[in-house]
Image 1 (cartoon, rainbow, N blue to C red):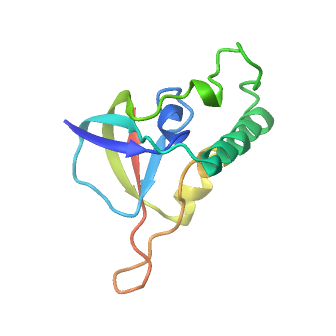
Image 2 (cartoon, one colour; image 1 turned 180 degrees about the vertical axis):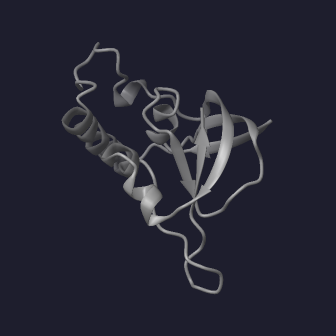
Length: 132
């Protein structure tokens, strides 16, 4: 089994079902079980990103309210420096404008969505790993 570390809040959004794709500048041929780990990093920029994410989920998706005890974790409840989920990596998808356009605003907010350039161009490949 392989593992990958993500900063919060991205790590916890995967087991909550609110982040379907993890975008990276590299691809992988690996398919199978993947342990999602939360990095120890806990900085103000992550907290402010969490606030922006909550706003999008509230406004665009209408799926939660950021009130205590509503079943959705608050920032201080997110785990840091530990495993948070076991998923099955099913695909590694090269980014295209069409694929990006199909994503929700919430999904775009929790990834680094850039179109892959052809070999020889200066930007690295951007891939999205899909897990279920």
